[in-house]
Length: 379
Image 1: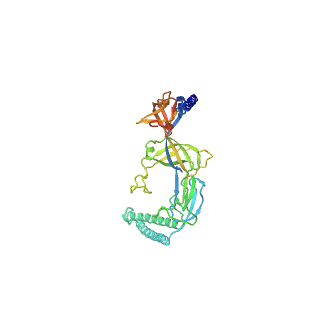
Image 2 (image 1 turned 135 degrees about the horizontal axis):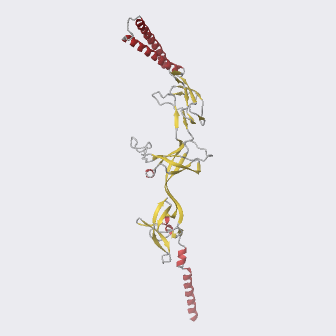
């Protein structure tokens, strides 16, 4: 009986010792709590725009004369100066136009001969003092003669252009050679030798023969949401990342922000794709490309525009916050039974991941990661 009692007492003692051994102390519980430290950092609030790299100034080359491309003097990628010959156009008039132009010249010649004969007759009468020099018919004959000469000259110039593509008007020379209107790079050549083209004087859309641009002046064009557009203003700092160079970040400045969405007020109330689009166009210039970077027109790019920024301020991860209504707080570890207490904080700028703390905690202070706390209200 005594042995049984001793054995029971030993068993109870072992069970009690095991219970207290495996129970964590308050200090141990506090040590397992997820702790964060209020750190010094920088917060930026940014707007994202998606677009492409394009020249600030580009032109399309078209012909003022209809005809066939006879010669192409420059090709894609070449640098040309303003006034450089680009194309030679060979006139290719229809038989009807050529016949009409020839007939117009013949008719004008006949009118000139008639006007000249009338003028000479009246001029003889004036010289013989039969009629005065201010006689109305004589004055009209002078005017008709000048008009007939001008009409013949114009008809002859038109025939010359139709036949050879070359003519002159006063000191100006008309030519079928097309010259570069600006200095720049040939972006593309859209016609081939022997291809017929439509002129700018036609009722149809003129043929675009070439595109040129000044590749030394490059800008970014893209769009932002209406929420970001409301906060943008020219002069804001921006960073560009181009698709071919994802690891290169280029500094730039916001230059223009559209007053309204270009696609918002379509004639049918919808965009071309049928979907509502509230994108606002922006333009970014003063792009500082590295010297060893090859940039081509049309590169897709993403722009990050800095709306607001603060540096060297106390910051915490947003996941550490708790909210009671609209009032934020953090959990401060302590020696209480719960192991923490809430501390109200006043927040500043946020980038969606980290947030600036204005009041409530200080840099270097420890707080608990509320997102990792189980069973804590609002955590």
